[in-house]
Length: 149
Image (cartoon, rainbow, N blue to C red; front, side, top):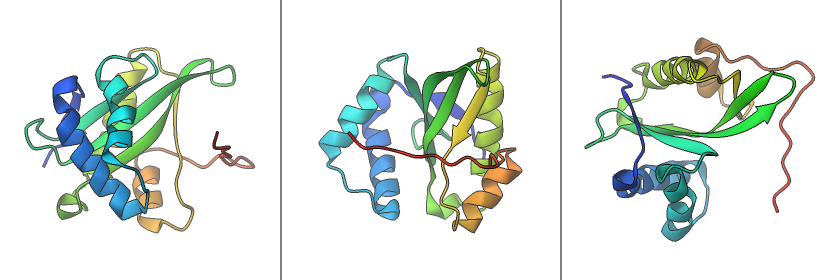
């Protein structure tokens, strides 16, 4: 199984909504399909603030990753946060998420990206193992804080 990445396009919206719905059900995130569509559609239509990638064959993707772009003085330019990454349960444990998390930053670095960040539940040992294997490290004395508007 390969972590081949395809940049999401408008024709992928239905497939992505299905994958996002599955991830949200697993993670306990409550949203309507309309809210999911409204969050995904601009990414697929070329909004410059982020991108969605299908993992695996576009006709039958096995997962997805959404990244959002920002700017960091500390890191010297363009940075990104992995907003969501999901691999179907039936194909987990085969290195697909690790392969994705290694390939995507390399590809984005060629476009000028200086850093990529992600958020993880400190108690999720499996995710921590995958993220560490892909080169992500916790930042000493830092934690992500959020304020919902």
